[in-house]
Amino acid sequence: MGKIRAVAGSSGGEGSLQFLVDMPSEGADANNIALHLNGNSNVGIGTSSPSDKLHLQKSSDNGVVIENTTGATLSLLATGAGRVRSSGHLIFDTGGATERMRIDSSGKVGIGRTDPSQLLEVHKNAGGDQTVAKFSAHNYGDTGKTYIELGTEYGDGSSRIGSFNDTGNKSVLIFETHGASSGAFDERMRIDSSGN
Image 1 (cartoon, rainbow, N blue to C red):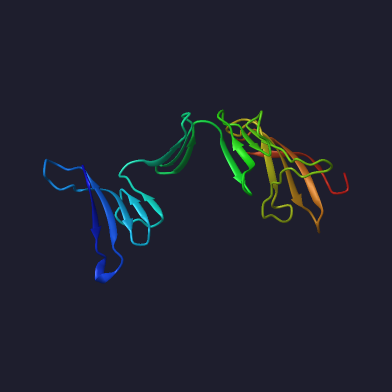
Image 2 (cartoon, helix red, strand yellow; image 1 turned 90 degrees about the vertical axis):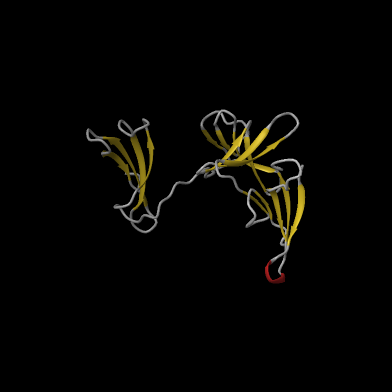
């Protein structure tokens, strides 16, 4: 059993509507606010002071589960860090219902692909010379290089390819291998803007 209670606002301001449950004994008043509707149409579940259109609050991990009749679920969780959980693929659409990226149920990420075969697959649906991905950093001159590193999980035994701006708009491509010291790389080859 429960009840609905109207609460007047302070100094004649907007009031609120509360839905109460959890009657402690027969004939006693319901005392647990299950849902709070503010005069500004904000809804609070677990809180009597919702700060947005829907505000959920819980003393422990909190979340929202959206489920269809076949059992597929999407969960939004607050567990100390924001989390999104899906029982299947997680698909991101923009511009209406146009898919741009997905994380499939095995953890593979596809950008421009609906069937990624690797941990990350990026595809641009256009022919000819195309830039599919770009990696950059706010660097200028030989003292600042932007790298892509290939190798082992912890870095030792890895190699990397770097690029930096030389003079004007000229670029230099360098190749480095891991040295004997942990975290140390040695340059083995470079190609300047003239091809040397």
